[in-house]
Length: 112
Image (cartoon, rainbow, N blue to C red; front, side, top):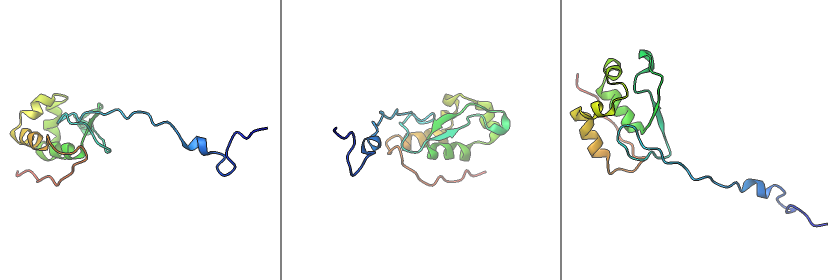
């Protein structure tokens, strides 16, 4: 009777899982495809009753946190166009548009 599995690696065929095509999710703020790291961001902060989450790059989330308070983010809610109307955010999105999806950099603190 013939063997079903190799003598040396009886579970060899179990290690060869078919890789499903990875779905590319666009960033909520900049619209670029997300890379290997996806940050699930609450557009309305949890402290203000926000429950919805959106996929973002870490650098895009840091830009929002740096430029807006929780009260301001609550007022904007899910309206990404209103956030992009802010000159600092628009400048950032234009700058990051041609960067790699896994690009990271230090974000300067907002002058208050």
